[in-house]
Image (cartoon, rainbow, N blue to C red; front, side, top):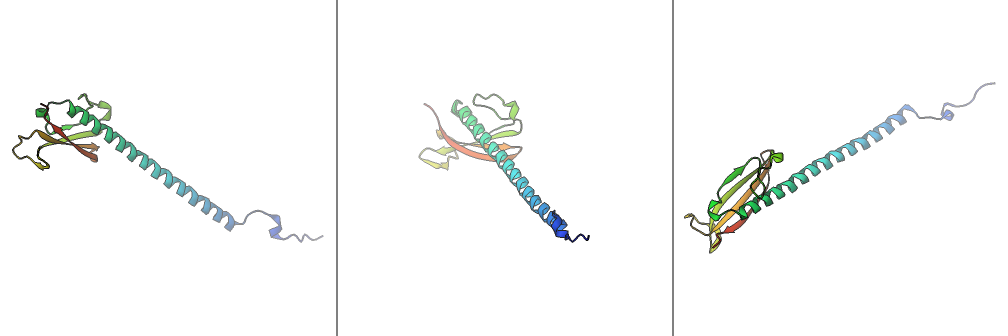
Length: 143
């Protein structure tokens, strides 16, 4: 007796169907890897932003307790905490402080005579030399 079963009746996948399925699964995997990479990068940048804000707060606290006349331009590498203690575990971070006198009756104007009772303190927080955040605040001489 002759076997009349056709080739298609045996079941299974053709080579073209297998290649198409592999290509679709491959594209899905590439998309997944790209999203993981983007999420990791965003997580690092968020962590850097949070750390920079905390270091700026430490400088703000540190300057709050300093005598008015001792507030000058300073650079900390590694950074310091609110008591002026070096934070050795953050050695990739830097804090740059710029201080300028401003006129008491017009805070936007710089006092070139440097005799005003108002100083503007600007803190620039950097990670591995790249600026992450820059913040500033006014400090007045306490009587």
